Image (cartoon, rainbow, N blue to C red; front, side, top):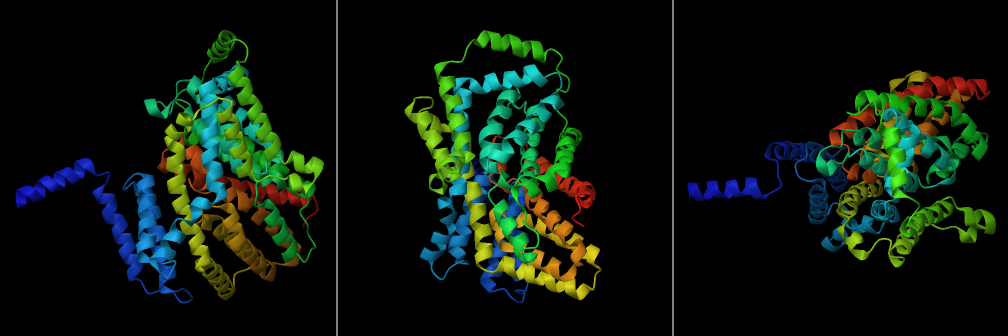
Length: 501
């Protein structure tokens, strides 16, 4: 019997993608949370859902199993435990509900479209062009990516389409030009650094323009409501208020990431000549490259909502619809084929794990957990008797860092921002209310820095394999604190100069 048990254990260790130590820790977390008394204001099922969500995050961080497997396990547990419904059918419907979410399919399709850049060679050409212009040092290429984000941001209302669908394929092409590839174990040469810059430019530019990400108009509405229409963030007002602190963040960010995750290849003195030589060897654009370039142009025009600007709101298209149009164009022109779509494993892996996290975040909102948290926060602040300045700081920090519980900025802003702004309006002197609201406005984008599921852009870049999860979370936390500090110091000073307080 003992021999059989030993053989089974040996088979388990060899065949199952399972790490025993981290699994034990995750199980202890789950059991501990479930044994705790249900907090007042929550149902037992809602608290059980909190326990499942937190345990899933812990298991992902500890790498108990591949992230897709952990996501599937979360779907199974939510379905079996029926914490979101009263029947098994209702539970599985809830567990799979997020797979109909357009944002998730935007991410998947953006990854599939980016495959065309590699297959046609256009990605390599763009990468070589960047290297020929800025390639003497890796940090220069990083600034080039940040500038690219900044130029596109005012015209691309989907930060996922911009950072994941346009800039990320360029970043991958540049990394490949330096033979920096996760598949070869050479990602740290330049790829890790450039991927982090690629990602962290995205939240900054999303904070700088009203039209840079989808939930920003919702922020405008909440700010207007709380101020009784006394302060309205027009496109120009938003851009002006965020201009200086945003530019400082873009200036500082590549330097900070350079210190946190330095590239192995720092100086590339021969890179410019190499890139020019390779571009000459490649010759003029091929037909496939022209189709790819034209498709990107089409996507940019449609993502920027140009038809709606010219012909009226009836011509407005959802970003996910636009992405599918682009993918279909590439397939019917033969630029990529169906086998390319099927073989893009990172896209389908992302669909599973990001879909599961989005599902749990949405269910936390539906079951009242987020409303309970907001109300408890308000009560604690009022009871503490804090002065207005610490109150403002606590409100901003709790709002931003509660994004660890969300896989969507739109969901987070919808669930919590109005409540936090309302509490601020009640406890902060009127003359300081506008800078507080502007800090909350900036924080609603800066919070995207934190996790690999924080917004639609993050799973695309994380899924490309250049950055480990530990590095992603560590860099995200530090960059979040740095950017909040810049907005708190540079931003409030700038807003004082503009006369807002």
